[in-house]
Image (cartoon, rainbow, N blue to C red; front, side, top):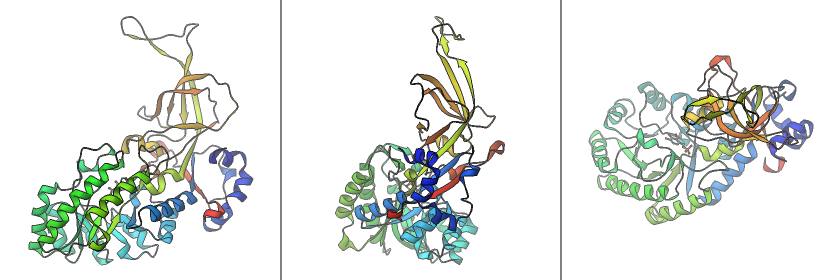
Length: 420
Ligand code: PLP
């Protein structure tokens, strides 16, 4: 039985089994199931995050993970990761503030946004968050003015010939051929460039993207050293797979990356190696469950001989169904637009007619862009049924809105005792 099925059918068992009591004492809002008659909600498996952390330490022992807060800034996750010992990649003043509030030392934060608001740089300076990335000249001028002591990491463009889910190189990263100009300017301004960073793209789909980027970073690192910068940091960014259905596996990435690091930045080089994983830590830990709040039967669109679409339901035609869930593209499924992701539904009810119908699944708002699944084969569902979606922890709830007054799903956490 899947996690979520047991969560539903055996609420009491779940409560004891997964020791929700532990969290109820910390988060009193988890009073919970009585209220959950139909609201969409997330279940977060903290044990999954803990085991990801252990795997990281085993397979990438030379790389310090700085969790990318943007990916899922839930305070429970931040607290757990801070406690486990990860450091943090922050993109803004607010993210820095929420990490500092946990008592994390500013030395465990990299401000990894190459284009920063001036007041945010001032905030970083005030709170001694020294490590920050840059990829352009204007940023160097701003930093010279506002935080000349900062420890700078130049972000370069990784080679672009690899498949990725989200290409961040469209927005950030200086071309390695232009790095020399930035390094010279930093030297001229008396700024401290301490290292090189890259991001192969979020949701990398080819492991070689990592080794190719390390090689590129090595060349820029050497340029920095030749110019007299005290280069001591390599930041290999994010892009690590995190969902169960990822096209590449973490073990393979680790193998390829370790080999590249041993070749270009061997332990005896003394270079500190950090990374900014987001998706890796949280994607698989969260399952979203939504309720079928409405449905309608429609005729399937049939194309006639002229190619025109006509609506017809003859005696041989199967019906098609439209279902409406209480979470959608303006909510957690914003990942379909912003994260270029795909989602796969699972059904809770196991005893049902096996016949499947062409179906579309929609969110709850009045907008027609709010489409979650199109032309999808599903057995007939009924109002009040639950549909759940695994692998929903990354870039989902962090970017969701309450458009049309639709509430955001609450998140409930559990952890198996042997993993806690
Ligand atoms: N670091 C930076 C600068 C990013 O922009 C991102 C994602 O956008 C990440 C790290 C996290 O990437 P991922 O979730 O693919 O590991």
